[in-house]
Image (cartoon, rainbow, N blue to C red; front, side, top):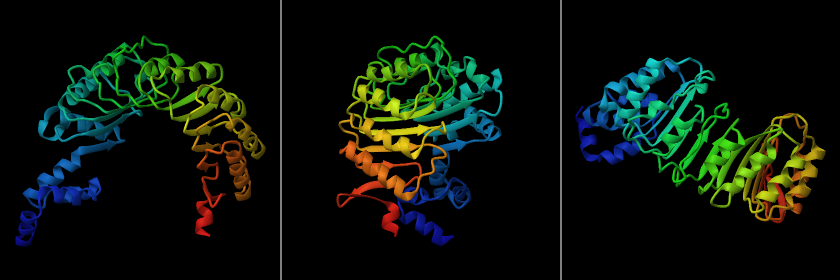
Length: 341
């Protein structure tokens, strides 16, 4: 015990915190019972970043935070997942009380079931005083959510990934003045446009669906700054060969492009054909193309990387369906597999 006390008296709390940062949350639990100094330091780390995928554990947590300010004031980031359960009005009221106690919160993720996502649940933010920099949720985009977002001027990353319909979602012009990164899945073009319009967003992740491709891509022109990074998930859309010119027309100075194709139509020949469309990009440095079931060999991917770089000389890194990272080395295209060999 003397050794423990001497160690804790010599090491500043800041050093202890740096050491404890290397421990997993489950490894910190025994530290809590070591001594008072270790407890006070580890205690802050245990509750600083919380990610609970179990609805039962999430419910226990919000009950604790709703009634105990000692614990709630430590929380900086929390991820609560209720997607597998239906929530009641009482749970929403409890969640509201817990969120009011999380005064130091900076990152919040809330996921609900598809049934709850169609209801107005954003009223739970009433009375909250935290200031977020990151917000992720599956709740519907409606007037209540827009009102909440208007109270969060420090948000730089926003993710809306619910199955959104056309609700009354209108952001105040001065809302989200620092928003730089926006991710969405299954959102209507009107919702994407409402978020991007007049805001300094330079990184966007979106899904494209047949019938609204052009309308969704047109929203990218509404950002107050040039978009540099774009991630596109193709669910039911035109093939990539037809899609890339549409993107290049709107974002010729794009620097990073990540394309995920879920339709099993891509072939080695189609990937080679994509190269001609890349010629329209003037500053593209990084590109990722992921698609299921493409029977490409190592040599096939090398030929694709060479063809793409010839069409778009600014390319520095290429990632293809096999997951290999291709890059230029001594004026030739190589990958990490080459280095290992």
